[in-house]
Structures are given as structure tokens and as C-alpha cells.
Image (cartoon, rainbow, N blue to C red; front, side, top):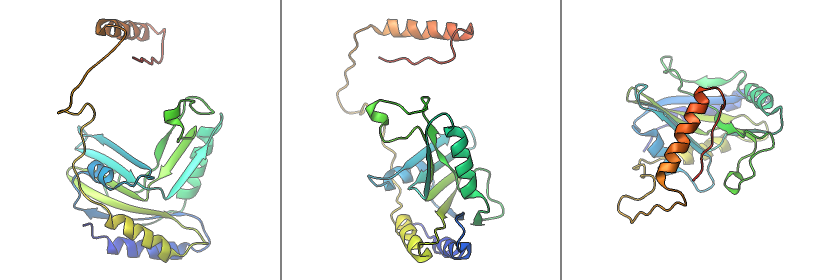
Amino acid sequence: MVEAAQALASLESLLADAGARRRLVSATIAVDLPDPSAAVFASRRADDRWFCWEQPDRDGFAVAGLGSAHEVVSRGPRRFRDVVSACAAVARRRGADEPADLPAGAGPVWVGGFAFDPEGAGEAHWASFPPALMVLPELVLHRVEGKTHLTVCAVSDPGRDPGEVVAGLTARIAALREGALPLVDPHPTGPVSIASASPPEEFERSVAAAVERIRGGELDKVVLAR
């Protein structure tokens, strides 16, 4: 169980101090959760936004986000500019309670992405994502050199009681649990079969040809489908 009473008390005080101003507030503490990605995966709800990113060769760096304290959405040719402006407006004058020696990358983060098409992708598996989306997770777990920090985030809202916000985050933290990150498909003990209209050698030749064309400056991006 993660003990975060002090961080939550600080967050409630920061929300109260924000008054009528709409701004990001956060509190960060060290926690004993060695695997942020596994914790977020095990603790996510069916309707949650969640995010995991790891770079093991960077001193075991990992960052994982759970829930959504705030979202920025846009579309069209101005989507990049719109998202940058909206994220900056929320983060401006941030109120925070965090250790002085907080490692780089720890604290509140924005996670999300952009479609190549200004109006978004047409495939069904992208239907839940707008053309431009950035999410500020409610909980952010950051690990580097074997040390993990938890950041609790909220965006002040003059029409909402700070105690109500903190109560929701208290329940969110109480539900955090560790678990083994599942293996990707195929399942190691299940039967596996691979079917293709083309032999594997043809795919390999296509990849090799694409690499040569990229090196020759003919292509910038290649999408291969099987």
C-alpha cells in the first residue's frame, strides 16, 4: 500500500490556495514501487487513460501515467500550436510540493500523440483518439536508478470543492497495486500459427528494398503491412 497522506494534504492546500485561478497543482513523494509500468497496468480501470514508457539503458528510466486530471484536444492544421498553447496555459504558475533533489523527468507530465492526418485516422482501432490529444495523468510514477517517485496531479476548478478532488485521488492511490506485467502475444504456452499469403522471404526483401530507398533519399517513411 502506498502511503501518500502528506502529499494529498499538500495537494488539498494548494488547490485551496489557487482560489478562482485555473492552474495545475501537484505533490511528489518517494514510494516503494519498483516497477511503474506493471503498477499502472495492474491498477488501471476499464475506462482509464494510461501510459507507460521505459528506457532501460538510461539508468532504468521509466515513466507511467494513470487517469486523467486534464485533457487537451485539437484537430486541423493548427493542432500542434493549439495543444502547445493550451498545455502551457494550464501549467503556467503551477503550484507544487516536491523534493528539492527531484530527478529530471519526475513530476507532472503530458502524454499523448498526434495523427498524421489533420482530421485524424479513419481506422476503427483509432476511433477513441482525436487528431491531437495530450493528457495530464492524475498519477505519475517515475523511476530512475532504482528510485521511484509518485506525483499526484490536479487542475484547480473554482466550481469544485478541493476536498472532493482529494477524496477521488485518495481512492485512486489506495487502488494502486503491484503486479507482473503480462507477456505480449503469442502466449508462451498456447498453440501458435502464422499464416500469410506471401512467404517470409518476400517481406524481408521488401524491408531491404525500403531501407535502400531511404538511404538514397527517395523515401522518408515506410509503412509495411502483412
